[in-house]
Picture: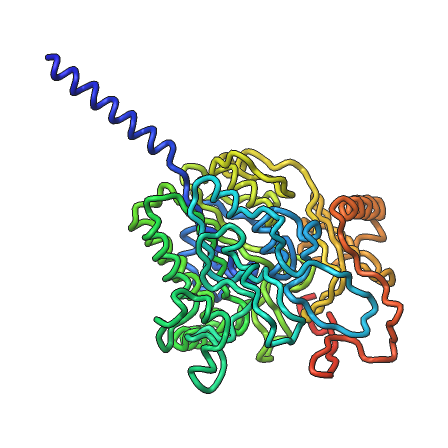
Length: 516
């Protein structure tokens, strides 16, 4: 009898110890940041061409956001916001690195910080202190480099992800796009010339085990799965910022052929680029492989997955030209633009034990919010000062609401997509765009009644417009935002635009007003 009591007591103690171990287990985080993925590029967000069954299944098993925003309309600032939870304007990292070289523009752009400073605390550094193994796989684009057009710019590995809290860096370097999506990921006539690119050099282990026809999206996924297998017994933060679906628009030939045939049968529709659709499918297949690997490793109950984009989808010149990429309709314009097509992005979160399957959230969130949300849900002891608002309570219970607040954007630059220096604010249903050029009037839109931003309401609702301008100016002062100023050397009779190889090409929004 005594032996039975002892055995029973031992079982109870063992069960208690097991429960304590499970309760103390930290949740892994897989953060997928897709480059230039538009708001309607996924089937679950309304695409009429792209096939994304794996991402759709991820959304069905977690939470999907209808009003998620990127911190900026171009990549580097949004990536800095992911890392720090701070507005790009506060970081003074306000353009893609290194930005465009322009000449004779009406406004003079300010000096800005073309890298992520080491004085900033990254989410990887915080989680590393919490006992997480940390890995970066993919596009970094937060490293100083030479001036625009300088192909021989010096390398700066001191700014790479492994100097910002990541134990492992694979494929993260200065540049923001791959010369090619096929191994060895470079351009040239010879294999040696093709290998002469930083992506090949930073792809573990040196890219030497690649093979002809290997696709970059697949390779990054392979690396991520290998790391998850290696780290399956420890908590990990795996940041996987894919290069896809950024240009160059290159996809597997068999998938391109598939979508060409599909388009011939479908006829008219929103999405229309077979190569781009093929890139989206390759992304989706990679997400499916990642989820399958998590399941096979028995990590599903303790691995959170985040999927979002760094800015809106690249639209391009009028339909029918070879440069047209995607559409963000019913949103206006796309990448580089402060209209909704440039900043509203897909966002999906599946957090075991937290999110409810199939929930769709309407509350606006922005890039910086992921920083405090992830740190709160992983149980971080300290959360560094940031500009985000945790939406953890929203994920736990869809009846909760985020506090009413304003969202801000600030871009004191010119961009080849047609952007001119601007700042903007969204508060409630209203959005105000304040162009830095005093000759261009502000624009005010009601996003509930006018999602495509067709009707500028500033003149008939000046009380709202002026109130938002006051809030926007106060925020700019609070974060130390750098504004573009009138250029005293501007000459309207001389060519204006981007300067490259002694030539000047116009930087104008006119050719991008294709979905107005």
